[in-house]
Image (cartoon, rainbow, N blue to C red; front, side, top):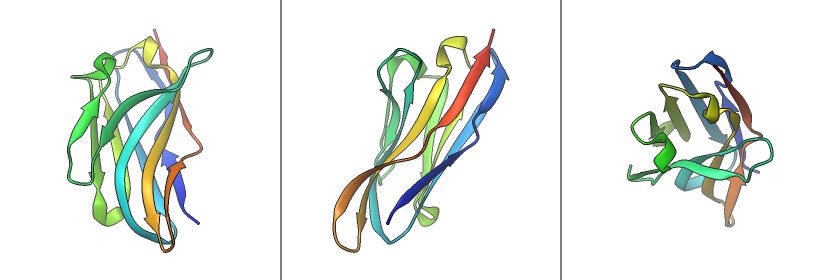
Amino acid sequence: QVRLVESGGGLVQAGGSLRLSCAASGSIFSINDMGWYRQAPGKQRELVASITRGGSTNYADSVKGRFTISRDNAKNTVYLQMNSLKPEDTAVYYCNAGVRDTYAYGNYWGQGTQVTVSS
């Protein structure tokens, strides 16, 4: 069984910063793409940023230049550094990873962490 556990969410004022972390654990053979998604109330879940195993990154236009995704393959962990936060960044942030375990490949989600940006 593979688990993704997020941490680092919270309440911050506009212009502030937060760093999210997501650690994968379990019977992991390898992890391919990892990413962060978010879902605001009444809206669909959307991709925020993703990173390949080799380090290639992709960002939503709304966060380019403010957010940075990175990963530590040795720790099976992905990070999201969020700077210059805006009230519209308020959402539940979910970690996602494509994981090959002992028997098969699967797409896994974390439980989500709340990020609230006050104006």
